[in-house]
Image (cartoon, rainbow, N blue to C red; front, side, top):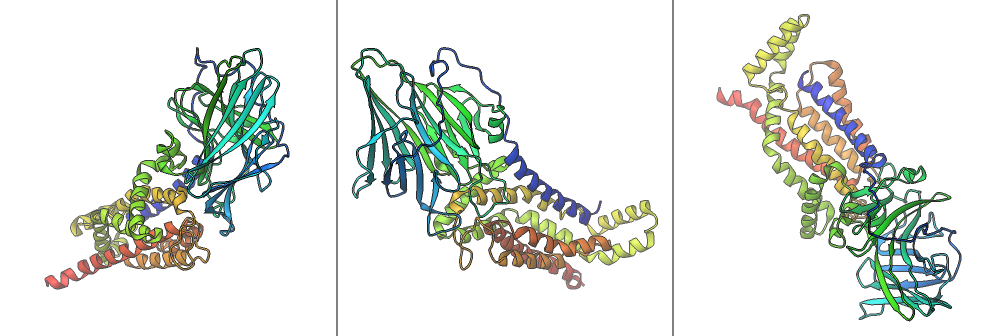
Length: 531
């Protein structure tokens, strides 16, 4: 196999690898083993579990902070709507992004409730003290209080929103005013349909669905289809971790306190609705006793720094098998953006740094190609003389390579090594919410989406044509034709790639052209200079 065929094989393999990688990430998350019930850790009374009776219509309590516009229903005290004011809608950038909703394109809400002793669940009615709340200037938080009184208990549900934080404190105050002890459990769940979120990159197979994290089994995706078929496998009982609902760029997750026993669950609620959540026991509340407790809900962008919020929450930014490369690449890209204050310029600078890192390998590759180009007439002559004798042809070609000091595989190694870097940068750009709607200049208003006018892919195709002209012409006519149409094929493929990745490819190609042209000219003029 000569270098041209090997190169074509690598290109084909790379294309297959990209398709396989995306498909695997979407359809086959890493399997895990279900854990057995841990003895001695009561979580909920036997047979108790939240029952879903649909989303009842009721009055809404509005909440406005610096980063949220939220609505809480008096039916169950559900969090029915969350707008992220610092993020734009995928289709209309003049509108805020809606993460939780009940009346829009899909259903996605956060619910809580108490189990046992006929205490209020998410199906019960609550009374609000007022219909709207606003985080006032100079204040760090605002609290919404809902109440539900009954003959034997007074129950208050409290939401606390914090300035500049996507964490919401959600808790209860329960006072036993009856004559008998109460032994309730509390549950926190996220309910969502299985529809895909609106995105500019619909062809990209990103994950949407529940996830559970525990120290025992780490990050576990739970497919909607597995829940429907009762095949969901994840740690059920633990005293750590979180349960959440993921979609491209954003996540909502319940974050209970560490070292508190809880039972994780998923359910098929019917009508294409599914839930993920957790249940914890509250212990015994004696007559006359009042207890209070709270949990945290994170509802916002998925970012790697979320590990500072809760262990493993940063894994919601899923780079797949190239995480070990993508994580430091995006870390460096973030530093560069902080210096140049433009993500597109940061991509250009990062490309230059990557090119410098691979400079020795690239130089060796281009020297090998230049020598093969210079030796092309001799190769053609050998093919004409020994074309009918494959064994002799191979022997003469090897002798020519030895005489001219040509490594026929030298041009392929750099390509092979840079493929993981390319894929890692692809997922770093695609999966990082910081790149969402990040402008470059002119018509490029979103580096995470495809170029709307296909200008960048066409420029990249032209740069590939120039590179092809600098490479030695394959002696096989069929290979030569394939090499001629490769720029066109890649341009069409890159029509659908994020603009940031196409920008990286253009800059990389331009730097490669400059380096290859200089090395080729140096080698081609060396004999004349020596003479």
